[in-house]
Length: 90
Image (cartoon, rainbow, N blue to C red; front, top):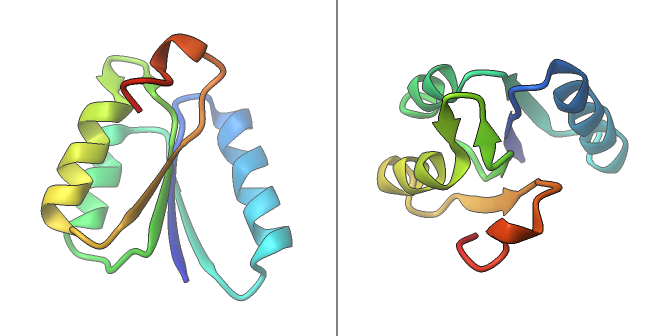
């Protein structure tokens, strides 16, 4: 499986990547702290799932999810956030 992981906090990103490697050691994991860089990468790389933070600095993970679905309709989206206020929108 190919995973995209996006979080604007580098340490959180590293933690997510490390945990994914433990659970799915055979997978390829592509991590980004920038929503724009992640989207540009996703336009040229087949991905199975994306783990997205909702608050990405100046970007929004919900918007990024829509953009990812537009370019890769079969991608599975998993939101990773500590903000319960986003549960309904996610």
